[in-house]
Image (cartoon, rainbow, N blue to C red):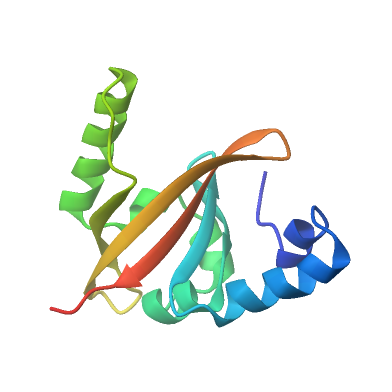
Length: 130
């Protein structure tokens, strides 16, 4: 499991779709990321711009390291609720800690999928105004 490159994702789709995929992901105004085994294995340039972290820095730690304390607690509560079979919204607000130490209010939307046979979360991150 470590960091994957956009080309790895592109290899799973046909060439004409690959160019479209690359354009959609890298030109998107929202941050787009993939999480496997609690690590960010892919982040587009928008995630990097919002957080100030490089993709290597983002992949080097468990993803909750980049959330504020309140959001970390909510993530744990969400996992507990999900393990009890409760239905949860895939769209919710998070507090992201930037490299500069600021708190960024954002909305995330998570879709669950399988990538290379591994459970993967595909997420978008949209900055919210204050």
